[in-house]
Length: 183
Length: 183
Image 1 (cartoon, rainbow over the protein chains, first blue to last red):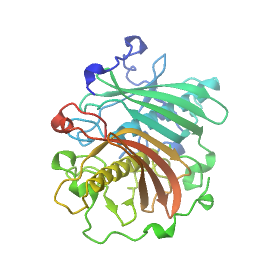
Image 2: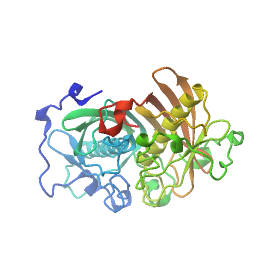
Image 3: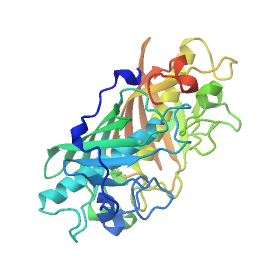
């Protein structure tokens, strides 16, 4: 499949970037939950993903490194799965925060979700080079789980779609105690 | 969920390691298809995953690095997705090779598959520290796709299960040409 068959991202959904210094969901995870290889602010060897609320939904932007290839010219599927995973967890976590009446910037930490299941459909090759944009929305929000659907775009073209089941991380998961999920 | 509820891996399925110098599936991908971040022998910045045939099935072993955490003490879900992805692609590729009458060690390169879809169920937290073992089997092998089910173990305990749809990589995917899939 080639890009010219791609679905264009609706321009109304907030292509603009968050303002400099805007708070990311991951900035507000509690310290014990801020070590994730994908998105933990305390993990200097990780990817450093940041998920923002742009007024209409969540967005994560990331430019893969040159080594993040499947074959030359295309992004590695495992990285795409990682982007969708962390973005979807942040989206679920923010939905819980909003449900509790909070907004990013409030002093209370954002609750951390972890992944129960991850489904990624690779719709077309993702070109390696441009910044990737992931957008998500919560399609189910219950007491014990949230379901998030996320879409990954390159150059405005939809390249992959994810469906992720998130569950709140139990407090016992911190400090290397037994817990649930993989975040 | 805690490890004491874990399903033990059947000991008959070849816990032994491949002999030193044993050929991995990834050693026999064509050069153009050997750049994958997860398992490409030409990608020194990647994970260097290697998938072997152990007489009964495929096995990939990998010890995560300390930074590959979700929270301290547990493996990052995106890494688990990557392990299952590369292992399943190698398993599908080897199945095609076997179907063509080849065995690893034959001079012909192993055909490369890429990922059409990836499903991972995180059954329990995966402890960070021990070597992880991924085992896979082909549950469907057709002309245009293969379906692989893979299981990931830590300390002999089943921690995650994957179901992956693989498609043969088109020759046009090399050299940054348009292709299909994300492998």
